[in-house]
Amino acid sequence: MKQIILFFYGVFLLSCSQHQPDLNPLEMVLSSDNSKIKKVMDSVDRYQVQIRYTQIDRKNDTIIFTDYDFQVNDSMYFYPASTVKFPTAVLALERLNQTDTLSLQTNYYIEGDTIESTVARDLSEIFAISDNLANNRLVELLGQDVINATLKNKGIAPVRIAHRLGSHLDSFKTKPLILYLNDSTTGITTPTINTPPIELKLNQIKKGTGYFKDDVLIKDPFDFSLKNYYPISSQHTLLKRVIFPQNFELWERFDISDNQRQHLLTTMHTVPQKVGYDSKTYYDGYCKFFLYGDTKKDIPVHIEIYNKVGFAYGTLTDCAYIKDTKNDIDFLLTATILVNKDGIFNDDVYEYDEIGIPFLAQLGREIYQQELKRK
Image (cartoon, rainbow, N blue to C red):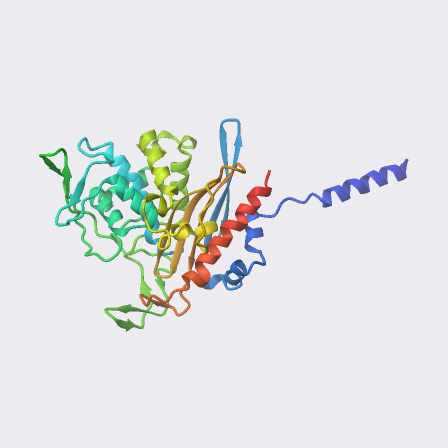
């Protein structure tokens, strides 16, 4: 009898040893032997990588998020580049519901400019090709103070939108929009004066060993303290609110209609060639770094990527909800990486194509493969 008990006890121990808790799935991905991952992870401090990956599970009508982080730290600064266009786009839709004379299809132009646009067209250009002018027009509509205060009131923090994007003359005063109300009349929005930004006190707010200004090399670290600030945690939270609003309290959601939200989601995952851009210049992966950023192949119809990328000053960032309708899987992924080997900013010598985009593409593929195997 004693031998039988010992036998079953041994079987129990063996069974336990074969069913150890699963390793952190993000750690498994980052330990990949794939050269696109390994090259970065072998010198990870140099690349200032931050990643948040969210598994999505469903039980009846409940959606369950499980977040996994790698080096996510709100106090560790990275330049968000064009990812700040995402909150601007969402809040522009809110503004439509607060302005009787403005709709998605209302034609308008910025005072002193000659380009006519609509909010619908601006949203399309922001997500399809990450157009700076389209974003800046919506900043004129909203103002930086409104963007920052609204996000804070909804619990999306920290965040600080301080400036427009691209080549422009920064001003704390927004310009009025001239609206075409019908064939014979126009309307004018009221400009606002916004609060000047205060210097950010964050780790790595000064980067590198030098930078170019007016074609002159300045041998000092580049100071980002007056730039936009939009960390991984805030980006990921905003994406959750847009994709899964039902998971949040009413005060945390955005005041946009179902039709407006559907329009936003459509623009977020529509690739450039579907809205008239040349597919050779603006291939499907042009603004879809995860999975397809390092290839010029078309994205399969069953793969839908709802995202916003940013790339500037050697920093690449993608914030995405990825959905495979054929295999019935979906997940959220936000990541950033700095690729500036020479430590000089504004010299246009960054390893985007050699290191940054291949890393993000492979990161997406590795997580996608894990999702295919996950129950």
